[in-house]
Each structure stands twice: as structure tokens, then as C-alpha cells.
Length: 242
Image 1 (tube, helix red, strand yellow):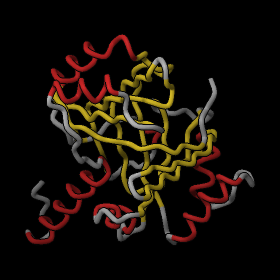
Image 2 (cartoon, helix red, strand yellow):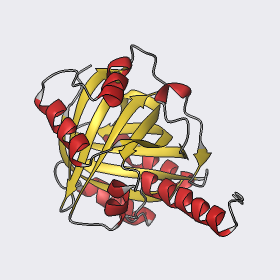
Image 3 (cartoon, one colour):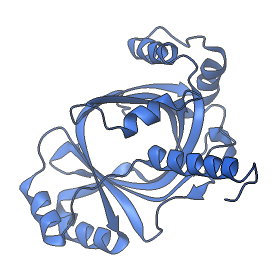
């Protein structure tokens, strides 16, 4: 399978019910095809500073923001392929650069800072690691994704993420995809990712079902929950009341 390493596209998010998802898929079935991964469990380690500089900046919704993460499809073994990704968003357009590495190689880089190769993408990732000074895994996010692409335009993708969960300890992809659920189990996050504008058949279907764009940051939500619990613990004299 060809692995794409550079992306440029717009991404729109929608929080929808599973019933809305079924109606949408029924309505657009002739236009889409399930992608090669089918349904998969996506696991990501998000990097940040001890002060959570990257996610705090992102939550302020600036014109430019970026995230760094290590991603796998299912729980990786030592020789599994994983993706070290630098995701930037500027003026509504998403730019993503990712390097495919073996899991052991990625962890060696994270722990030692020694570049596994001298590729352009790896240098860009390493620059971000040094620029933010002290980046390390700070949050684990997992979810179950089903992905589709348009039969006539492979750049148009529609994904549905369910069972979004997180943990702020055991920050190792190899330890499994367990975590605390942070999205209603009867809801999912739909993302429409496109290089060009959405086709008429899709916009008309969304309108007819009353599906409108929303906002939901998986890492941002997990961060807010974690911070609120820490503040509650401090206010209660060190007793964890979560």
C-alpha cells in the first residue's frame, strides 16, 4: 500500500449521532467506498511541554497552530510501522508531514533525540522538538475509526470516530488502547477532508439531515478534564475527588 507522507487539505468536523451516521451513509452509499484500512483503532501519543504549551496555544484558536504526535493503527509491536506526524493548521488549511518508522526506532528517537535518518520531514520534526524545548509524550488518545473515500475523488475522505478515549499515564502505544471515554457512546465525530470544495451531492445530503459543522478537539478535551481534576485535587488539599 502506498503511504502518503505529505498532506494539504481542509478538514471539517461534525458531532453526530450514530443514527445520523446511518442515514448519511445510506444516502451517499453510491458515491463512496470504504478505504483500505476498513475499521481500525487509531492510537496516538501527543507531545507537549510540561506546561502544555502546544495544546493551550491551540485552544486559543490562533491563525496558526501545530501538533506533534506518534500514531499507530492498532497496538504496535516492536517492528510495527508507526507514524511520527507534525500537523500544522494555517488559516483553515491543514498541512501534515509524517515519517514512517518502526516502533522501536521511533521510541529510540523520542528517548535519545538521535535522528533515525536525515530526511527533510525528519529534520522538520526534529526542529519542532528542539524549538519547543522539552517536548515529550503527555497524552494518549485512541478511537475506533471507519474511513471512506469518494469513488471519483480520492482526495475527498469521510471518517467516523467512535469510543474516543484518553489516558495521561502509561504513555506508551505498546501498552494497549485502553482509556477513559470522553464522547457519548451514541455519538461520533465525523470529519470531511478535502483538497477541493465539497461536491453538491454531499452538501445537499448534509443540509437535508440537519448536519452542521461543530468543534471538538480530542486532545483539548482530554487536557481540560485532566487540568480540572488536578485543580480539584489542589483545592481539596491533595485528595483526589475524581
